[in-house]
Structure formats: C-alpha cells, structure tokens
Image (cartoon, rainbow, N blue to C red; front, side, top):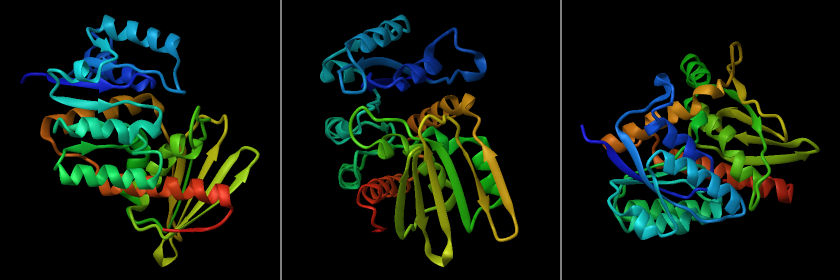
Length: 294
C-alpha cells in the first residue's frame, strides 16, 4: 500500500514533530512507529505560542526527517493527500480550516476544535456543507486506563477527571489545555450535558457538569500538576485510573493513520463539538461566576 502523503499546517506545537517522528523517524522505537503515513511538508508561522527561535529548532528536526518546511500554504499542500492542522493557537483554527476545506481532502484538526463554541459550530457547518472527512480529538480519549474504566462502567452516574491547567500564551487556558480532561469526561459520560458551573481557586479551577437523571461530572484543572486521571462511579461501584502518558501520542497517531486510510473518523464531530461546548461554557462560567445553561 502506498504511503499517504500529509501536509502539516502549523509548527507552533510540539505535536508536529512528535507525530512526524512516529510516522517516519527510522530511529523511533519499533513499538511507537506508525506505518502508512508520511509527512511531506509543513507550513510554519509564528503565533504567541512559539517564536522564530523555537520554530527554527523544530524546522531543523523536520528537515532531517525529509519534510519540506515553508511559509507558503499553497506550497505546503502541493502533492498532499491529506492535511493535519497542528496549530496551538486555537484562535487560528477556523481561519486555516476554511483554507483547508477548499481542497476537499481529509483533515485531522488537532485539539481543541476551536477557540469558542461559535467558531466550533462554524467548522462543523463547513465540514457538513462540503462533505469533508474530518477527525478532531485529544490524545487523552485513548488512554488505556480510561478505556478500561469505561468498559467496566459504561454508564456512570458520576465521573471525576483531573489534569493540568497549562497557561495559554493567548486566549483561554481552560479551552487550550482543559480540553484534555474534558475529552476524558465526554468519552466516559457521552453527550447531553445540561448545566456547567465553575469555581476558580488559587491552584486552578473546578468545573461541575450536570446531566439529566442526576448524573454529574467534575473536572479538576490544576496549575503545575502534570498528572491526568480520574474515576467513574455508580452508587455501589468505582473504577479509578491514572493516565499512562507514555503511549498517548502513539495511540493517537494510530487513530490518525486509520482515519486517513479509511476516511472514517473514530470520533463523531458531534462528540468533538460536545467537548468544545463544555470548554466554552466552563470558560464563561469561570469568568462570570454564573451557571451556564447549554
């Protein structure tokens, strides 16, 4: 089978290099290599998340793996079978999705979907109108501990997820980095959230999500604490887990490769939009101190 040629749009995130490493670095450990995909090009541009020095360092690494790095979108996408939008600055996601959508090629849109729910809905509208094949998720959805806990308690009454609250160079930190913990919540609880409230603390934020049937999710975002995990519960049963971060990128790259080979997204865009809606509501609730009705 011929390799699928991919253009990466954006270099302000480490994901561009981390994913390319797993697709084509001959020195990458065999257990982390993902076959069938090759990143042929990358478009670089500065954002508040990465300066020229950082971009230069990443460019050098990509070029060692045979990737053409350019500042031209048209040059980057030339000859590509698919695109990966790898942009840390979520405020740019809609702009570059519109550019990518004109090509009609499969798109992996790295997390979060957008910088707010309105722009997220616009992305879904464009994808539907143009009948695009689109996949967007956080790697935390594919943690083995979360998957195991969800299999044992597929319909939890209560879910508690925790993770870091990284400080965004621009925009909302909750939207930018809270996406990981909220991805786990939606993976476990499904769609249908009704109300969101948030409390800011000296160490981050605690967000409560209410569902019908007295179901509840709690997301705890902690500054400087780089550990993910959580638990799923019924009234008489609990399944805790701690995330094994060592395999997250490899797991996600396997999912991306499968999507690019089949055209079938392993995560419906409606689920990704649920994550985006919760992030948007959590940000608004944290600023206003008021409960947000979805």
